[in-house]
Length: 287
Image (cartoon, rainbow, N blue to C red; front, side, top):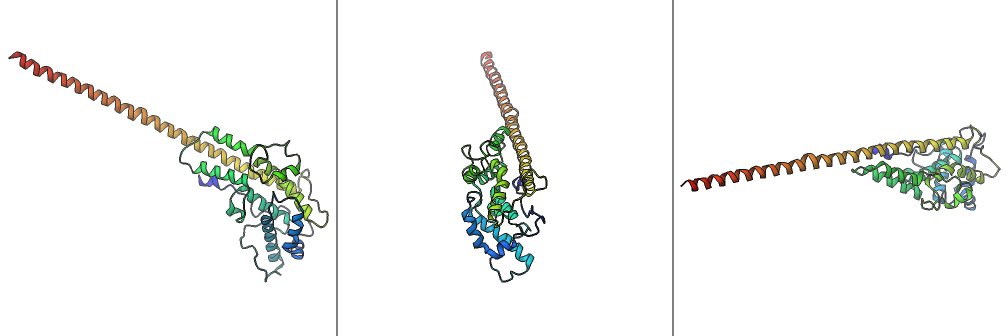
């Protein structure tokens, strides 16, 4: 059952590869983290990637670039963990941090504040999986649909998605599925906005584009969780059936049989008592 809880698969990824001749190391090594953060503050993406999360993505990129260039030996506060993507492109690091926050586990999200909807989903799944009692599959499915239903018409406007990204997971804003469905497009737009030059990551209609690879990773992430939740539904339904069967067995084969046996013993006792009374009476009458 504990294996069902480990549903984070976005980690140490590198979507961009070696397609560009230049990488983003100069962006971070020349401008520094603070210079890049100032550029970020002009953009409207704080609901998707808060400043602390953005800083972490920059820090992870800087660590990789320093290790690659071997010229940051005197740097302090470099990333210690080995979880970050081994990539020289900020796109990979922005995507990595965002997906980890969506997964709802602070420890896996570099200790950052996680997405509200992701945390709500995670806590619910953990609660159901840890409960020794069973649950009906229909109940789990209904709850699952709350955060896995897509609202494609409402998410056509990317600005609407960005604006409502950090709000509670409800029908008035976005489902968690909507966030996953749009995360690559948002990160693409953010990444392009951070560049001094007009760098455009290929569109999703090109099969080998960064955006297409990103969408495929998200789709794989969601499909794995779908499979795990289905297994959870089967497991909890089996537990419920087992509990009901045991209760019925206890009721019919134990309690009712014992009651029947008790009534039989009482009946036999009454019969013996009647016989004894009649025997005593017959002795008196014979005198």
